[in-house]
Image 1: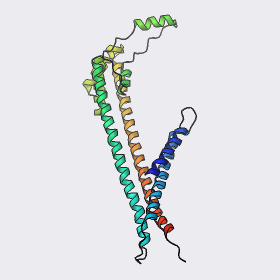
Image 2: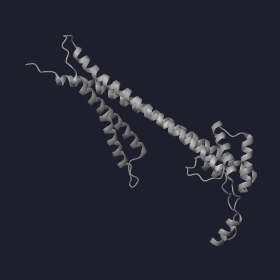
Image 3: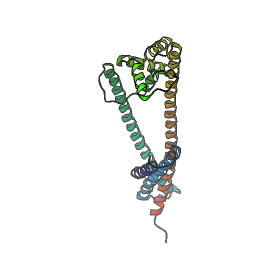
Image 4: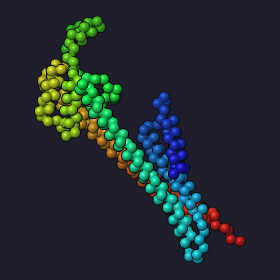
Length: 271
């Protein structure tokens, strides 16, 4: 485990240097493949080291049974792999538990931020991803075309005169809740869709049909974003599971063969 950790730490440092944002480096796909291959190599070298030491330090057995020595050497290396796999599983499980706890705390912090925003109090938290889609809902419509191009000073005056009414924190929080509920259920209810269209019409001045179309477009974009994030997470999980399996498989073979090699190097030569 120590050898594996050292090699993976080295690979992480090399990968960070390759992925420098100040220069043209390899793509994310090539970095992912390189990381997977490096993981397999690190597992092979780590388990091979453990298997070799286990076979080399094993007490010799001269019981006259043909093949018993080779079997015991292989078993020593295989047990090194089994213990290492269990230790790794415990470590990954612990890290997953800590990550889940951090996610729960982040969700609680997000809920607190929404409550603070509803009371119109400042909060030093990162805005939720849903806020972007709420901003899309209330973007002002395109200004009507004019015969002549206004001067910059005239543009400022027109913007101030035709500014949309301010959106209160209570209304924004309510719209966010409605949108999140609709996304979680797969679609907005008809009543919620009509209500959001009315709010968009009142705040942006868009025609009712345009407001209705905007609500539908934003709902579609939000659903696609959530689906894309879920698909990426599923692909990442499958990718990680596959390469973890491959690394452990090669590690088992390396530990077993290294156990046999370790004891054969320690056996006295005849003559």
